[in-house]
Length: 280
Image (tube, rainbow, N blue to C red):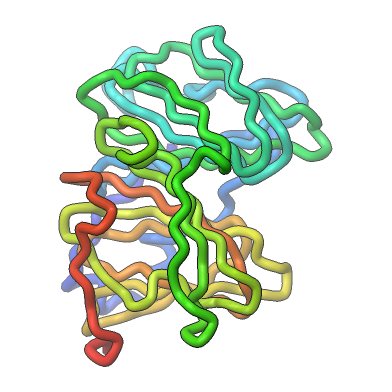
């Protein structure tokens, strides 16, 4: 498991492009037959790309759980959120099987012992994008397909930010300790997400961008509002966003992204809004 230390906002304004990417970008997230884990000391969130091939992958595969987490099993003191962005697959939680089509999600509560990930077709593997956060209470496992997620339509064609937000792990859909997750799909011809920009001092966030054509990129904007920086991102790459940073993107074509938040609360609208004219 790769470990990322937290970054000070005063230091980050001096980072080179390489250092910025080293600190915040997760480049190779999905590798068939493997599980990629990045542990960030920002709110202790773990970002994972799980892509089973012809064999099942366990949540704690090739991981010294005691050394890395100080527990006997991965979810002993953690909760887990998953959204599948690949082919059809299954997640088995302590013997109970959940079938996940593309865009289906699953919440797994604290205390689950054995979690197995499989693909229905190794030639078109599932791509389970996963976030895990420390938890204090066990909530029930919940399968959420995209039709059960709460839909919120935002933006306009005139502002190039017309989009639909699908809230999966969200207080109005289900219960969790601190983890929130959802998917945002840009309407055709729209390229700006999360604009006007905001910060939320009480929560950090992780984005994964996908549905990006091979010849396109997304410019992910981050940094303090008066010290903005950008990271050029390709398909199926993730980015860690500290609470002091804006988190917004503009693509060379429309795209989709998954957001996940952990922190002090789960209030989706608890934001410190910024005027576009105040950004620097």
